[in-house]
Length: 332
Image 1: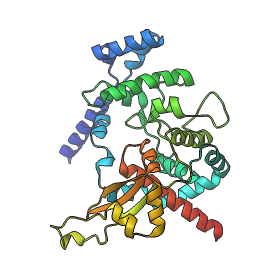
Image 2: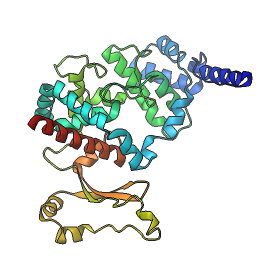
Image 3: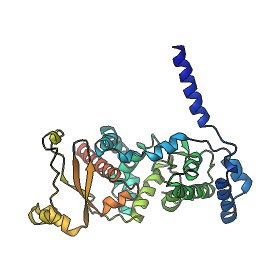
Image 4: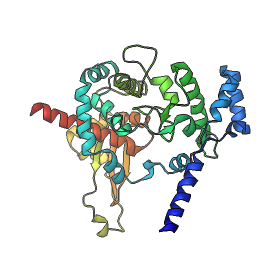
């Protein structure tokens, strides 16, 4: 028992120490060069940036998570985490609470209210989980690492400093995800600066607590990335028919019906849908095989939020279930 307690204390001390501020962080050559660039190009005060970067905490969890994102898991797990009864019901409640703002956003941006609601549901469970990492820590840990994505995050770090200056935010206090995404819609700093809008036209945009700004910003994001109003998102080709099917035909490949065959022999309404809309085949890995879908233009627009088929499919399916339940309850 004593040995267990000693190991437990050592474990906690190790992780506590690994998250301490590193007073020498700002003196690293790569950090120094970044600070000098921000001073020269954007007129930041050198002393202020040195003081800021000296508060940066080393977060091993950030590097660990960035190397193993959830999008690498099977679709079955991803779907079970994000397309849930709780998110569907809470999505209906969110929609009912902000139905006026959502209706206006849908009219202005051409993006369905259900897609806007589902995006918030997948990203942060309607604001419940916006992230507990300081954004300055998350971005700095990756930007000044040997990660292949370091250049991207170094640019996001620059955008973050510009954002906090423009929006009059304290860079030491802004929190977000392990990747530095901010607020209920989880915008990266560059997206915050480029796509976030104020619902009421104010200069200050609050993506943490102002649901009206959040709704408008997501609508604006999708619109500027090419959302096509009243156009399809995805259509199933085939689903895994039986979860134990692989026991019966382990040596057989799953056959996908060709697009031309489906166009010639499939359902007429589906034919028209496919003929009139460019599409591609999406393969979603499950524990028992793959699900196959046709993805249309708007599916790729959702992927501009997160470049993962799993992510886009979870947003689309959640939006469908939210809209269906809301209509059912409304007509009851």
